[in-house]
Length: 456
View 1 (cartoon, helix red, strand yellow):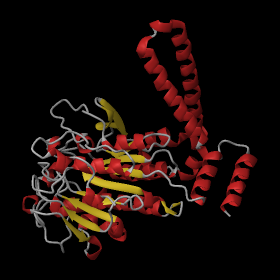
View 2 (cartoon, rainbow, N blue to C red; view 1 turned 60 degrees about the horizontal axis):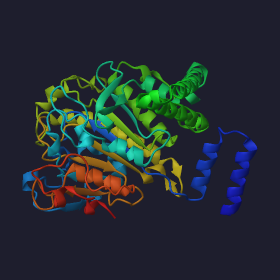
View 3 (cartoon, one colour; view 1 turned 60 degrees about the vertical axis):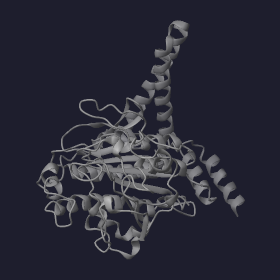
C-alpha cells in the first residue's frame, strides 16, 4: 500500500510539471509514510513578571521558593488551573507548570531583555546581546526556510523590537511589531496582486545584486578581502531564501492568514491577535520551525492592554502587587495574562487540528510561556516560573504536571539555562551548558546537562 501510494504521489508531482507543487507533494508523502517531522518551538514572552503564586492552582498549597526543600511533581489534571492560565484547561493534559528554576545570571529587574532567552546579563545603556539566544540556536538546529521568525506587540508605533533574540554576541535579530510588514515579509510570495509583484521585484533585484557582487569580487581578486565575501554570502542567502519561498508558494498560500483590519489596527491587542495568526501560519507553511512572540516585552511603564479594557499602566498595577493571592494587582494580572493565554490556546488548538504523520502538529511542538522579567514586578531572578504546552511526541517528560524544583541553592536546584540545555538535547544537540553560569551555584549538579526529571 505504501509503495503504491508513493508511486501515485511521485506521478502526481511529475504530471503536474510544476516546481510550485513539489513542496506540497513532499509533505503529503512524508505524512502518508509516517516520516518524522522536525520538532517546533514557540516562545511567548510577556512583560511585567510572572509571580510564582499566580502559576499555582488554588487547590495546591503554595510554597515560596525559599521553603521548597525537594523536587515535587503533582498531577496537574486533578486541579483547576489558575485564573490567568484558564484558557489552557482543554489542554491541561499537555500543559506543564514549572516552578523553582533560577536565572540569577541575568540580574533580574523590570526586564532582562535578551537575558530571558540568552541567560546572560545586560544593563544600563548597553543592551547588546552577549551570546546566541535559545530560540535562534534551536532554529539553527531544526531550520525551515528561515531558522527563526519573531513577531510581537508594543504600545507605540515602532516597527521592530531589538535585543530580545540574537544569532550571536552583538548580533541582534528584529522582532517585527507591525503585522502588515510581517505579512509582507513572510507571505507576499503567495499574496497575489501588488504584494506578489513586489516579491518578484525584490527577487529579481537580489539576483542582480548577487551577480554584480560576484563580478566585482572576480575583478578585484585578492584585493576584495573578507568584507566583499561577507556581502556576497549575505546576498546569496537572501536570494536562496526568496527562491525557497517561491518553491513553497502553494503551501504558503494555503496557510497564510486572511488580511483584515487587525493587521493595520492602532490597538495593540488587535495587532498581537494578527501576529499569533501569522506565527501559526508560518509554522504550518514550513516557513520556520521556531517562532518568538513578544507581548509588550521590555515595556515598563506602558499601557498595552487598552484594547481589552485595562486602562492602568504595567507599572501601575505592578506596584499594586502580584506575589500574594489577595494582592490588589492580581485582577489586572489575571485579565492581561488570561487574554494572552487565550491566544496561546488558540494557536495550540490550531496546530492540534492540523494533521501531520500519524498525529497532528501540536504533537511535535513545544510552546513556552515566560516573562522577560523573571518573577515579580521588581524581579530578583531567584526563580523563573514557566508554563509549557507539548512534549515533542514524548521526547520530553512533560504534560499534565505541576513541578516544583527545590529553592535557590538547595540540593536538586537547577537553572533556566539547564532547561534550555534540555531543549537542545531533545533535538539532538549534545550541549552541556547554556548561557552565563551562576557563580553562586554548583556548576556540575545545578547547571550542567539536561534535566533528568524532564527527559524520557
